[in-house]
Length: 275
Image 1 (cartoon, rainbow, N blue to C red):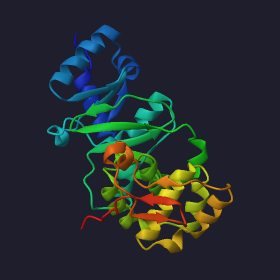
Image 2 (cartoon, one colour):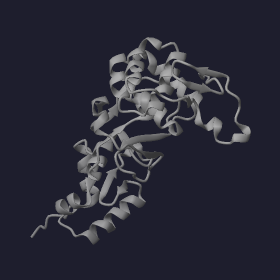
Image 3 (cartoon, rainbow, N blue to C red):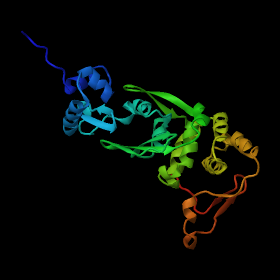
Image 4 (cartoon, rainbow, N blue to C red):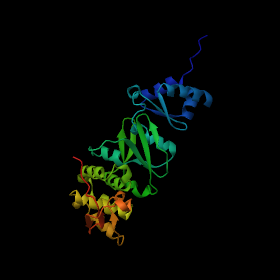
C-alpha cells in the first residue's frame, strides 16, 4: 500500500512563492498542513534558522525568496499591506520612502517609514528596518493616500502633498533641515496647490508655516498661495522657529538671521540644498 507523503512547511512556502505570495499566518499553515501549533512552530524555527522564513509579528510570517536570501527578507513593499491588515490598522508608506517613490533621488532611504494610528515598535526585517510613526487623525488625510502597485499586489503611499507636509511634521525622520529642503526641492514642481491647501487643514499651523516658508525659499511660491489663504482663515498665527533644534540649548542658540513676516518664521541658519 502506498501512503501519500505529508506536505511539509518548506513545500508549503515554496508553493506560496510559485503563486506570487510571500506571506502567511500560522493559522493558515496549520490548517493547510493538518498540524498543531507545536509542530508548526518547530518547523517554522528550522526554516528561520536557514533564513528561508522571517517572523515579523506573532503569527505572521514572510517567506524569503532565494534571490533575497542575502538580504534576509524581501522588500517591505511586498508585504506591508498584508502586515498592516494583520495588525488591523490603517496605514500609509510615507516620508523619505514616499518621496523616493515620487521621484526624489538626492537621499538614501535607510528605513521603511510607515504612518499609522497606533504606536507600534519598529521591525527589523533582514537589512531593512520598518519604522512606525504615529498619527491620530488618519481619516483627516485619507484623500492624500494613494495605492501603488508592487510585485505582489499594492501598498498605500502618501501623495506628494501629504509627503511634503509629513516631512516637516516628522522632521526627525527627514535627516535634518538640509536634507529636508533637498527633498522638497525635488518634490516642489510636482505639488498641486489645491491639494496642498486642502491637506494643510489637517496639519498644525506651525507645520504649514514652516513648509510654506521652505517652498517659497525654493522658488515654489506659486504653489503656496492657497495654503497661505487657508492658514490665514484659521486665525492669527504666532512666530515659529524654522528649526527647533537650533534653540534646544539657550546658551548656544544663534541669533536670528531672518524673520519672515509672511509666514512668521524665525530663521537662525539658512538651510542649504545638497547638490
